[in-house]
Length: 387
Image (cartoon, rainbow, N blue to C red; front, side, top):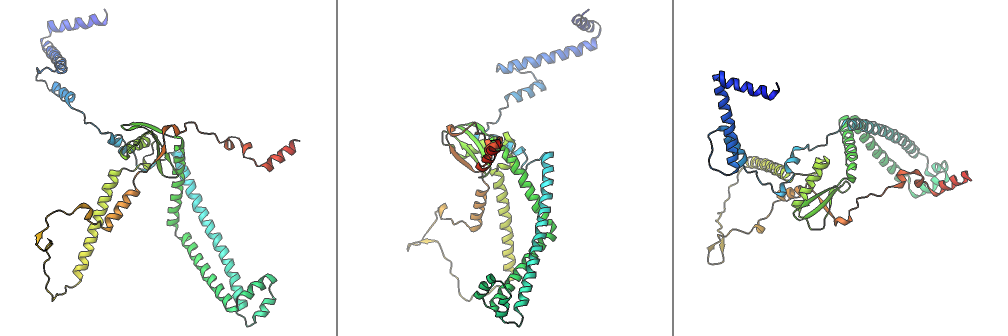
């Protein structure tokens, strides 16, 4: 007996001898048939529906219209899910620690060596001052020195040389203080070391983007985009004029494709942050003004103040019209805020038409083969040894 015959004999047994199971099975079969029947009717746009909860849920899902996403908002939700900072792997983390320690040690050693050099110079200055401050005349001092020093001493008097040496002495002491501040302020030195190591590893990561590019079909035409590390700008090639809002979409695609989210600036988020910061600063300044005004005692004015009405000409007509937008002066705070937003915006540089982009990069033979990097003198030496 195969599986199919066994299954149908089991169903026949249930229908004949088990009334309780027979009713459950019939209800379930009718439920399934109603579900599929209503789905067919739904697709045929028929108005006949059965009162079943599962079919209503299915109907709501089918009839639910998906929101139409504008092209300007393409890749926006995906970009906002990415990390705004670089995430490093194990090798990069090891390199961070290595560069941080090397920067810290080299800076300390350089400061110590500089201090030793300055101390030696200060000793020489002290000796020179001591010889000049003696009661001996300038001519006796000149006789003890070399001929080259005599020519230099004839240009300055004794008092002038003492003044110059004292100035050098004070300047060198200030340099020692700066070196000691760097050595003893370990927190700032560690912060600088971390910043140096972080920039070094990020630059290594960005160097990998030199040969990366993406192509996107915008409503205005195709765009090929790369990233320029030195300029900090997105370079693009296109045969048509592409507006900024479409370039933002291509920039998002590039960042998403090559996992370099920190390169992209989300303008909406930056605007929100800027507005909150500006509002906070405005409230703080208003509170400061209120405190200052509360502390200043009010002075009574003996002269009467006449109310000035906004009238036009001699007729006395009241000016009701709204002033034009261009006539409203911008405050210095608003101007500074606009400049700040412009600095944080994404930059796009047009490099020409698509034909100008070179897909095949030239091989640097000096890197591949060291023979191309030798000088003419080295070549002659090699030629002599061979001959």
